[in-house]
Image (cartoon, rainbow, N blue to C red):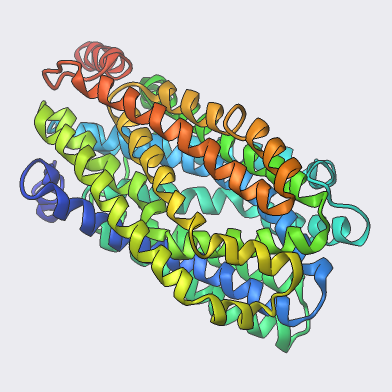
Length: 471
């Protein structure tokens, strides 16, 4: 690296290989969650605004659209997981140049394949929303809303990958600020477009697109300014990294896609109980990430910590990070569940809840939200799998949870308890697979390691070395 950029060089050290693991996890998760909460809180406020319009079909349309958007966002999350993992491992091994090249290629792959994925989804919006149970005017509203937002997926992926690379460098604050700026833009535009210009769902969609563009730009700027930016891509460099990146990206994407597919089944099951039930579930879907933003952020936050220590061969710290991640999860879930329970009256007033929607939201904002601990167990386990060379274990756990851990449990719950049984069944099935994930993660961490890269990383390292010497 040239002497003209000492700042970038000094910031490429593996910062997580020393110091308190619980502190690293807490700082990374809390700072990342602030950024996530900025985005999720805007979605939460969106739902409040839409509920204030007094049209049940609008709230239901957002519920159906949310399931499809969850599907598209999961693709970006998978690419971001891969980018963070390969960059963190390179940094842990002291290979700053390799980390920069991997960051560049991850971004290129994300944009190209994200655009293709978005185009496929955009051409099948009516079909996808119809599968979820949307019909009539609600279906038309959901498709209209999605047709505006889905084409902006590549911008969201740039922001996600940029944030993952920043976290791999240990810079959770700047990753957080990218999503905060996006959230602020969305928060300002929402009331102007929804109410001021009377655009309703159209206004909410346009605000979301603008926010995604802002997140992409504000995630790239600090990478260029503080971390030596990106390499000039070449065909040779792209082919070097395609295998190690997609060795993680493909199973990570498959892993992430399992969740929206499972959620789509739950939405379809809930639609049998009417639009009021779907609206109630949509509100819960907005409450969960706001309240549990720290848990949602945990997987991306703990991944670089595990990755750097694995790359440095510090196996005890890898296991310690996993244990502290579970402890951190338990503390957060108890605190948030208590706050949800105490906030019940305010939630009822905000969303003007009644009937089935009120029953579902109150069921969640109490004992059922404590079950979110098992979601956290799966998040931490998946981070361990992705950063210890076993990404397909994440795929197995997530698909198992969202098929065998969802369908039979939801069917039985719906038959016995109606709409509330759908939610109870979903959480119980998740708990079963969380236990399986914990057992598998302990087995993976028990395997001896000397800090050498896993096979996908090793293969590309040998190829890069060969090409380098030929030059």
